[in-house]
Image 1 (tube, protein in one colour):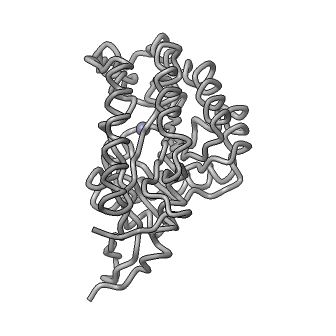
Image 2 (cartoon, rainbow, N blue to C red):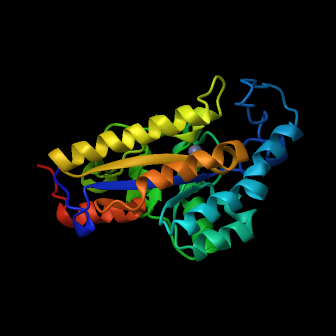
Image 3 (cartoon, protein in one colour):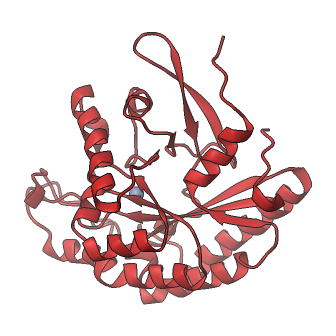
Length: 293
Ligand SMILES: [Zn+2]
């Protein structure tokens, strides 16, 4: 396994990922053929009708949830990664300003929160490019990272390299970053950093029916942290990803679980809570990419 030394001799890097998708989900108002499924009820309508109530359930994340999440991150003075669908940022300028002002990294979660994997190459490239341009405009910084919704295609990584992205996180295979050799159209290989993500510790587990209770989620995330920290102390540095969503963790019945998790994780000497971009670049500095062959 790759040996990485985190800054300050930390053993465990903790990446908190806040997904911002609300306002960019599927709706016929934006030209989609069907509305966003109601995950909390397990209902998916396959007909072209607006689901106004479900749209408002998403809007809760922006109106009420974002403030709670950003307050906590400010209180604990954490640097995190916001994986944002570009359009969601465009539609919530006050929230976006606060994300930037608090110094969080903004990683691209696509132009919208939709199924880009069904696109042909030209359309997928346009989607990836538009996302970067929009995020650069709303936040002032071009995104270095990429997260697809659900799936990526055989060519997504090549398109990311061609469009200047530095890392991707469509991967659940490890507790450490690594290089990926991406085959380009001319047969050469170019580097992309893979910073694996995790679904098991994700607050999505409290959203889709049937779901974890907040207590179960907190116990799972805390146990993951304790185990990885112990392993990192014995066997070498590791990273832990915790994925969150404004509309999910931002509810009053769930936000307390994040506070408890932060109480548990912060204040330990060998923990580095940081952005994914910082994790990716720390890895890349210590393990320069070598061309295969
Ligand atoms: Zn997402």
